[in-house]
Length: 215
Image (cartoon, rainbow, N blue to C red; front, top):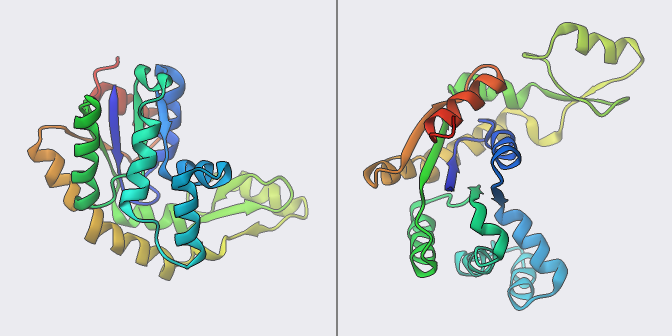
């Protein structure tokens, strides 16, 4: 299957995409990974991306789409792919549609992992890393025994600098303004499947594969 994942920061897109990839032989295509790979390889597109980044500019949609076009022509894509993190806005969605049509690879589904805003804020602002074990915990959702195990052993629960409420609030605002319009866009195309992203990860995954008809 050829799938696009949508969802706000903290909705669990990456986690669910990884499991879907592992259990159904799909390839996760991340534009961030493509950029890093192209820059490291020193390809023509990678050099253009490097120039933009060195100048403190965003890498243009045309450069990202060029990398994506190349990636979607590799043989491993034939088993299916998951696009996570792209498109992020209507302009990118339209450009992506053009590339897919050019390659003869129509999307099968667009998955929206739907999570309440208050839960998203707690998922993101509550994230902590145990300084001893590196284990990722959450002060709102992790069992108290796991939190205590870290601190009682002499460790600290460390919060990432960008996991503060102001930064996360801004990320969610950007999502609402730029990415939420894709819900209607793909809904009109008959591709959108809304999946409840709240609750146990296994339960969310069960709803996801049911929506895709993979059960």
